[in-house]
Amino acid sequence: MTFFQSLPSILLSSLLLSVVGCAGPPELESDEAILTTDALYTAITSRRTELLDDSEERLKKLRDDGQLSGKAFEALADIIQQARSGDWQDAAEDLDSFIRHQPPHAHGG
Image (cartoon, rainbow, N blue to C red; front, top):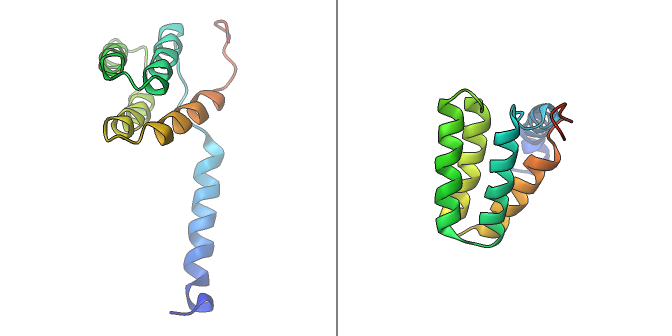
């Protein structure tokens, strides 16, 4: 397949990525979710699995208590899985992007 034959697929993929990327990550709805995500960042950047486990449990509880959306939990769970698989650096970068693209919050952010 030549470049020109694959061009429509490349353009469609680029368009989809730009549309999906514009939406940003799911919003963290509570102060506790923000604090727990910060703790997750510490766990990942320090490569400490016990802190990773603790953060994951706290995020599950927040989701179950309605303080974290299912979409936000899934996005963070994907990052946790990345770290668990040994891809700590990419997990840290993805989490950094997730945090940086959070909308401003009325509750302290």
